[in-house]
Amino acid sequence: MSITGDYFTLAAPGIHEFIVRKSRFIGQAAPVESEEAALSFLRDIREGHKTATHHCFAYIIGANAGLMRYQDDGEPQGTAGIPILEVLKKNSLVNCACMVTRYFGGVLLGAGGLTRAYSAGAAGAVKAAGVVTAQVSQRLNTRIAYPYWDVINYTLGRLPVCAVTPSFSDQVDLQLIVRERDAQGVVKELTALSEGSARFTLSDPFHHLWELPDNRAEV
Image 1 (spheres, helix red, strand yellow):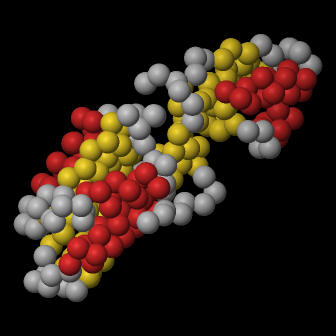
Image 2: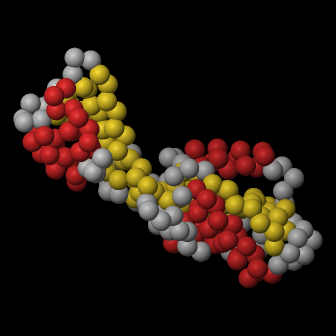
């Protein structure tokens, strides 16, 4: 994937199940990196619910939302796939897929009822999955002499870094992940703390998932 800026996606697979007038709805959503991964996710759900009446879905692929697909799977046109897609779009999500499975309960819901049910299934699955930001990030590697390690280790707790991985030999080999926009500031602070003794290397940019403080899903 080319680096084109930050985007929102899902943290992990999520599921939301509920009953509407005897019909059972099961919303499932997950992060995916490609259309092939999206189709595999949807296929696995179908295999797990072979007797379900409908498997309606939507997915959006690409940091710029370049690929969007949806399907009503036998429900009246526009009552299932599009409402699911709209939930993903309202939450500004990409690289994700969502399927809402329905076991028909014998009571017709009408177009409005179906739209509300499929929207609720998608929103519940997104909320269960959790929203994260995929932000342009870099791996930062350095070696720290032991006399500086305690103060640097303490300071890392307040710096904008994650995935801190130290290994210990004659010095401390430190790898961490930092947002690209924060990288030079982190290097500057760690350089000062090590009195200029540490040397740093930064990887090429890549997307890393950073959790948001509030995982609300809009319907």
